[in-house]
Length: 126
Image 1 (cartoon, helix red, strand yellow):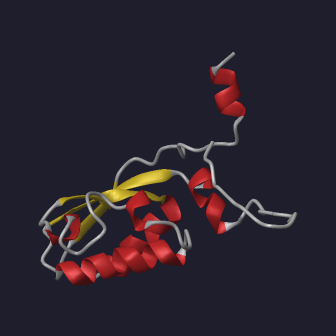
Image 2 (cartoon, rainbow, N blue to C red):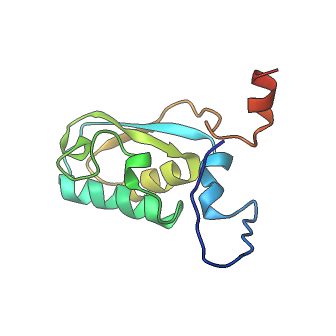
């Protein structure tokens, strides 16, 4: 489960459909994006990662996904490493945007999202 804090001066109805972007981290499998032989500019790599993250998960902090710090001076300035752990749709977008660039990118084994529907949490405590 994850928690979001909302406040209002008046009663409001809040509806999130199952395909809402805020629920992406609950739906999509997570995958580590590994890279090596990076010869592209760190600003360009960071820009690709950032735009991919904003395209799918919406306005969630980039630090939820990217390894180290959310800047071009972090993991994006390295020659190899793990860019971060992203929802599969975001990882696929990053991979698509890096095709043909001077960098080798691999998606590691996907895993179930760490945030689920609550049923798994209830079973765990029984």
